[in-house]
Length: 425
Image (cartoon, rainbow, N blue to C red):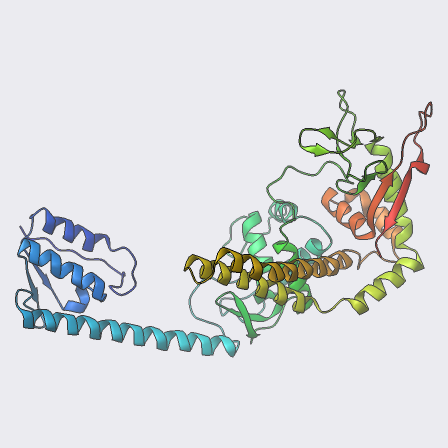
């Protein structure tokens, strides 16, 4: 029987699965066909290993191979030598072409130019260079809101409610908005193979520093993802004076919100400290609003900004450390390192990675307060309209923790003397 096998748009060199090629091999094995005719040998395969496997199959099944552009007789030694030479030459040509294309893409990238293909990036016209003003304003708004502590989920929901569509004209998802905000493109930087390699020829929509802060914020493994909405403002910020453990949300049986030093399976607290959530949250919020207007906080932030190195440096340090950890894992997988050598090499790299994350965290925390230092009254006016995660980010940027002391016997009202804030240095 006659069959035609065509794998459209799938290169014989790419290594991707070729369904029709595999179907042809299956038909040979089942003896549905007894010969193969190709336009040229390099249309059949460009991988020497694949060619050898095909030659073995032809030997086993006594299959004849013909080529329109020239005879290849796999039944003779000369024919096989010819086939192998043609296959090797085809692989060389493919590798050489791939290398030229790779170098061309690298040249385009280091010059900061636009590469062809792909969909229109949000914030830019179809030429990928000209800024689309209305979308650029949305990009800046989203960046500002994210740096102010609002979660990506909340921003995406708001955009969809307002009818603001993505570049494709569809609704925003958390993932698509995250990708857009994390892209160095919007800060005017050219990326190649996942790394920033040059300043781009297109205009930036946000600053490079803000772009670095956003990427560090989104890359933080401690960032809340796929979790239920925050209901407790001071989660992770209240500390038991007895044992030093963090208080957790532990409502009463009637539903009243409260924080507790939890004891039992999965918890390491002492179980001695409880406090009403509504009252402690009001107290800490008021203390934060007052401190935002204080000269002490202004001096602290100025000192922090002078001491804090550029966010780009710490982001680069973090990315380099992560890449080294990947290289180490590959070396161990290839048996180039022993387990002891792997552990010894990982330790200093993980320490650098932890330090870089801490420094980036400081930069991100400071940026949350940019709009509000010296403007506590303005923040007070809009506090109720902020997302709870935004409120938490502002509080956490000012307060390192609040120590909760023991309750006084017989004292049934809220006792603010139990609380000792630890302001961030």
